[in-house]
Amino acid sequence: MSIADFSGRSRLDACPGALQVHAAADGGLARVRVPGGRLTPFQLRELAEAASAYGGGVIELTSRANVQVRGLGPESPESPGSDPDNGTDSGAGGGFAARMAGAGLLPSATHERIRNILASPLTGLPCLPGPPGAGPAGSADVDGAGCPAGGGIVDVTPLVGELDRRLCARPALAALPGRFMFALDDGRGDVAGLGADAGILPTGPDEAALILAGTDTGLRVPLDGAVTALLAAAEAFLDELATRDVTAWRPRKRPLSPTGGTGPGEGPGESSDDGWDDGWDAGDLPGRLTAHIGSAAVVCSVRPLGGRIARLRLAGRLPLHAGDVLLLRDPGRVRGEVRVLARASVLDPRPPGLRRRGAARERAAELAAAPPDAASLLRTHLLLRTADLAAMGCVPGRPVCGDWHADPAHWSRLGERLPEVVRRHASAHPLEPGMPVEAARHELALPERRLVAALVRPPLALDAGRIVSGPTGRAALPAPVVRAVERLGAELSARPFRAPEAGRLAELGLGSRELAAAVRAGALLRVADGIVLLPGADVLAGRLLARLPQPFTVSQARQALGTSRRVAVPLLEHLDRRGLTERIDEVHRRCPAGAGRGSSPPR
Image 1: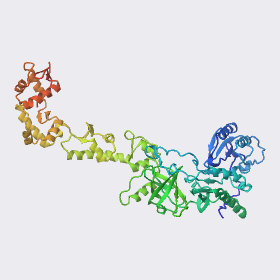
Image 2: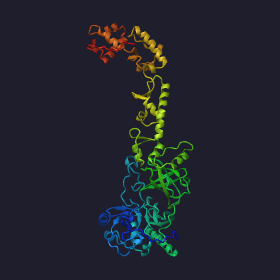
Image 3: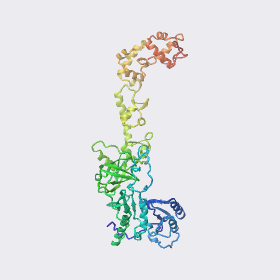
Image 4: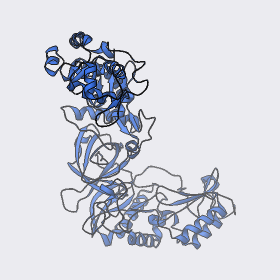
């Protein structure tokens, strides 16, 4: 088995450990291996106390789930193993190493730097509800065993312990470089694609794929023989080095099989591969694959958009953020075959639909040049709420209205369109006082009315839920309505309280819409449905009624005003509302002192 990369490096492996401390600028740096990333409360407490006693008091977590402490002092500079020229000093952390050994974190002095065993972080833990936003009302899809649909196939915790014990029991494996990494994936796909030198990915409850240098070898091993296979791979690597008498740090980091794509928060999503291999495009992707992020795994269908961009439609919901990195895995057509494909970066967790010819190609070109940030998402979605941007993993800027954010260019175009929209509405509906805000919202395809209000600028103005522009009052009435009102005014000038009946109004060309426009413009006074007088007629009526003996009846008022009962009754009710008259009983009214003064007579 030939898996070595003969790089020609001759420098000794200076990867730090708890015994071999790296001489950094801020003091000694000690790294403690934590197989599987698991620490007991006692071990964590001992680690914290040792970090404070011997180092800078800070525990750092490494990318391989190990821990390290910086700032260790030189306790015994002449300690055996020190090599300042090579950047190591085994004496700098003697007390620290003793504490780690006492806590059970240093089971083998010879193998301490090669215990790099990465495991799925949630393996073996009880099933928990999905994260917020992962499903309706915080629910989660479950499999037949009651675990979330992205859960692991097996618990690899026992394999971590077995691998650690058997690794330390083989003296020859102490020669492995300190960067050599094992990965035990429980089937979620969360660590199989992290480029481990030797690892497994279960294909079922009793079988696993063997992964070397981050690539699926195609070999399948029984799960109870997985540790044996991993140790054999490590020994083969060392044998290759010995046969060719060279130094290699790690097996070759070969790129994974080319593919790309991503997935969304609530449906399709778009992404691009991280660039592990420049020789592929999205058309190389299989039609269905599995997307992994953290402990979640969701089956998805793939639609290539062009180049390295693809859209995935997930079978389940995932709360993805722009910039998240997914691991893509192809279950394969042959039973038991699993291919780890590549990583993919999420570019848009909630992509828009593609409804016309060429839209996919345009979308791919747009995404290829767009970083996964708020500005890029707004250029695509045009309008988003603060909560939406935050849910997509972006820091919102200043909103344009309330909690709404807009693409600046789109918002500017909307502001330029609104006056023209209002003008067209006024031309099509000359009798209306202005364009309803709701009609403008529909015309501009905005989600809320308040966004329309935020776009209104002079000479536009808001008035009673309408957007008005240009002249107001009588000057805003169409010419036919103005002429009809003038003819009506001539008829009422001699007998101001003889309101015309419906037939006469129709002859004048004053239908219900024309009358409503004239009343809004102040050209007519509406007393009741179908009864209109000239403006100021109510004030004149109040003055005339004030001259009558008080109190007076409807009949006396009708005679004084020279009108019919059809007009007199609603006119008196109108005067009551205005305070020009007041009802005493069922029959009589009177005019309050001073009523009807200071107002204009009919025009």
